[in-house]
Length: 509
Image (spheres, rainbow, N blue to C red):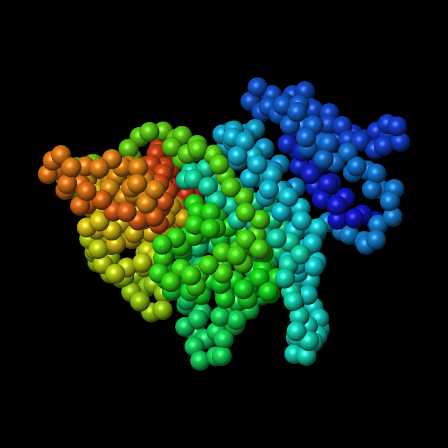
């Protein structure tokens, strides 16, 4: 008979033993069971090194492991074949040891520890949170429905979620993805970008028009599918989203949903300066009540630690011909032509030139038209590469286009798409006229020349855009690094190989 805690600890020991390529021994010392790791002497520790203090940290977490063997368990527990790993913390250390990740700073380590604590709470409360999609029988489901007709029931989760916020490139998305990948496969869970999540919400609301409370119906559908909801890049800029978030998440939380989210903004700064923000403020309190708020104070942008190569980012007006040449090289022998892409709710997007998974757009056709995240998600479900001609510098005169460009880059990054573009300036210089209110207050008055007055006229003071620009600059830098482009090419080759196998015949390259 083993408790859940014992099973979880066993998982950690198994992963650690594999990680060190050693053997696990047990011995009795002063009536206490302890665990020793005997390392295989053949292991090359110059390539894969764990400091003794790191090993001790994980071993010491489980010094009570075998004491539990002598304690009668209250419930029989079997380790499910769907069980995840030992948690994100150990996997994070494994990736650092193998060279897959660079060694993170203390802020990143603190964040992965917070995710580990949440992981352990969820494993402990798996049954009460109803995470296992196969555990609830039809009978119990009917019983809960019947009782809910007569007795109002609160189904708030015993586990609080986690809201992580911090600067760009600090590893928020990577850490949340690592956490998500370690979760058991049989859990009701979902990981989705916030833009995509809200598009899905609005699409479902359209389907349930006419019912007394469509938001409650949609929340019921979401919670049936996913009790654990991981949202990346929580950012509220749209008034339509802002006005429904409190009621939407009020329903979701009351149905037991646990939220894990990343953001560049602290909860109190969400939708700052937005229309009718007073109606949005109750959501902030709801969010802080149902989620632990964790700040990542790191100033390190890990996205900029890759190679400094420019990739396919061409600065200046004279590179349009080169952009078209690169585009034609990528599409090969396929003849390019106009294409149509399906987006949400029956909308369609015209692609001026497309072939072989590559799309070509002038900037004006993609960012100066009334398009949004839905159109961009539809585009990159069909295309893996975008050639974008003529990205301008942004200011007050084209603020709306700047917002669309930020959204475009977010969607591209989420879909791991490749970008080729010509631009008026470097990523940093594109946004130098976009500032937050705080930045604007620090600027010195300019009065001496006409050119300076022109700069003042084009200065765009916008808190949301001012915060978002840092993320966009960081992502543009990473998307044009050698590492990002090599990974993109490797994914294309892997996909092509899979398609060959799906034909039913093995073909050697």
